[in-house]
Length: 376
Image (tube, rainbow, N blue to C red; front, side, top):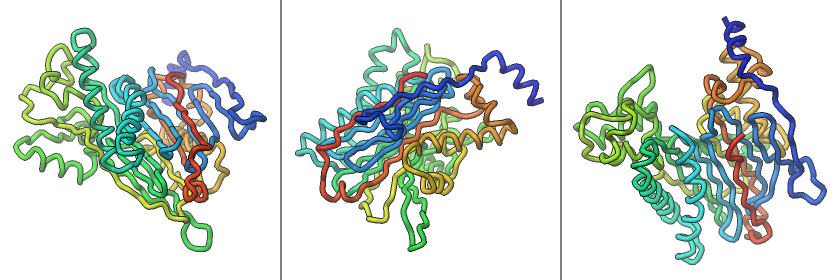
């Protein structure tokens, strides 16, 4: 049966191409390489105010729905992973607008960073996106049905802030004991209806709505439609005026909306950076479908930092291939869109913490702005 499936898919196959380019280093060192390998975009290594980073994205959808960025300067270091759903528009909008809003609000308070400043940046970005939905309603009503999960990490002085909407995840690699062991500590709170606590939260917020969470095809979904309970976008689940024609019938709900079913209010934690904190791994849900926190941290810990993000994506794809009882080399040849039947878009950013830089506040030397490729 697998052979038959592969034959049917063969028309969509294309070989990976090798198109790696030297990075910004003076000698074009491989460690700083930026390039593509078929559906994979990567930046193997770079420097920022908090230390070093590795970044990679693999596309599975017809249009890449994941977006990501790393920004570094006088404020510290900002990492964003935006896992879009229903299309790329919300993730692209957030990648364009969230960091500038964060910068502007922080500047109003003298350049400091607090959880409340990050929260305000999220909510302001949400307001602007919903306003965009209203502007385009008559020409692009489908904008009301796109949204994005948002995971943000900010290193400011010696504090790491992690803010999250949806089910992307931030995991800390922390050295333990004197044997060189590494613990995996999840820093982000996820908002997926398949988690008991999230279903309980939704039922408490909507005590009179017996259908606030529905088990559909073995998966819990908010109103039987969407798995996450928090996002930017998804206007049709937050504002009744968008839950009507002409949006697709699969999104429309017959009962009136008395209050939003979803929220754009992020869960934010602050973590005091400890000398034993080695790296922080930020990734969209596509990675965590195939790798555990512990396995991901183990892979990063046991290999050189350069190319770490790309290495994690390869490990996830190998696991996805095993689940379908196929060879990794065959999976690599499957083109976008068809690839979505095997795995989702995956974004990985790993931030390797340099405690000397962080403690000395040496930020001005490492102004960086990197965004993942829009399309492969």
